[in-house]
Image 1 (tube, rainbow, N blue to C red):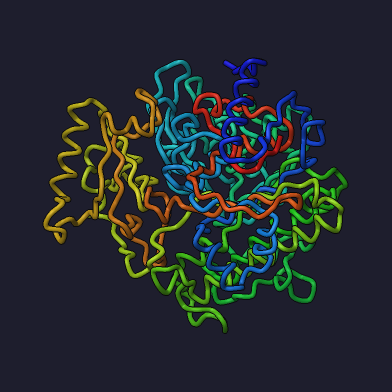
Image 2: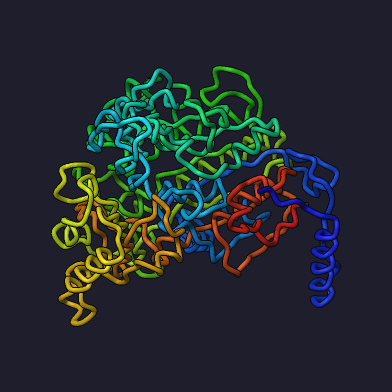
Length: 588
């Protein structure tokens, strides 16, 4: 049900704005009137025709403040001189990459998007036809029958070949890498593609429908979910999608990386070359240096798109109305414990922070400097092409990372994690003993039970409580901080939702259930360091401002549509959740 904008509603809104402005002793900034679409309309104060959206995964508001004051991100500091900085920005809850990305794209939360985690569960879907690369087993499916329920997977496991940089597809990293036999299936046994898994439409769908040209780069072919529902096996809303597989074998970089997309320092004698040869054979997340060459491919894709070409520069297209990418470098810099021998000069063996106030380790500082240089390259190219004034640049993050105080990190996991404690309660694909893809746990635990009856959920919660008494603290082997179930799940999910977990566990600060020996932090949970991220919105026409009131990354979506002269209420999640555009911008 699309909300209409009545003339009387506009007058009431204008009057309210005027009253507030008069109380503050300033003239009201009211921009009413029809939207003209994709920028440049009569009521567009800034002439925005393009939006460059950047997610620096893991980057906290604190990281931005520290790097600006410390002088090691001069490009971001310069961007901030014409930008609005939001100090109290929260990501989705859970704060995993998948819901974090889709909150930015839809303007919604997991409640309406139906997106909880890369790996989650849906009682209304059937298993894939064949096993995924990460171990979700294939199963039977009878058209028209009640679905059996299945774990859902939207990461590297649905690639044809997750060891290859292009995912085993026919292009250099697009949706052709998705193996439909590894996708969960609906009641009619049709595969559910990533863009159709999302219940809400996205800014890409709205902008494309309005005649806009669209592009996005990310870390998995599966994150083509940004296009939003098409109802077909084709992503029709992203004109240029590029997603080299981040979890592929870095040994393949030399043979697979497009030479025209090599970032400076990632080639040798004109051929692709990774600077950290010790880490070859690991994926790109295992090296502070190699992750920069991986991200660099996407940076060069953005440069090509600013120049009016497709991502690899092989064809002339047009400058996208909406485009952007995610960076992984900072996230890796925050959590990696390097395992391949001595690190390169200027890097520290461990990433993360050296104190509780967010002073970065040498390796993390290198990653922040890398993304700063990269964003500076994009801004310079916008200026070179005469696009600065007509481009809104948004720098934010899908998720944060916890804990900033690295000394508080505590690796936990089987047999002490919630999924192990409740092993007999869980479906095989979600249990520790099921021999499949396993539970949905990081520094959070989402638990779907075989039996969702109130009595069974209560029994499961009692088992968790018994295994994790609040006092004495030493006996809380599961590190459980808070347990949500029953009515309290309603804080985050709608009753009866086939994708809503029965139990949600948030652990004590620093506790992570992945039991990983190569990490210092993780994300996914609800802690401050998980959900608080940077948010900078910039354009040469803006004056520097700092907004201290709480905002959410979901507000990026209606803000982008508003900037381009489109109606934010064309987003279903905006209607359902009443998501507001970011304050302090006065775009129309």
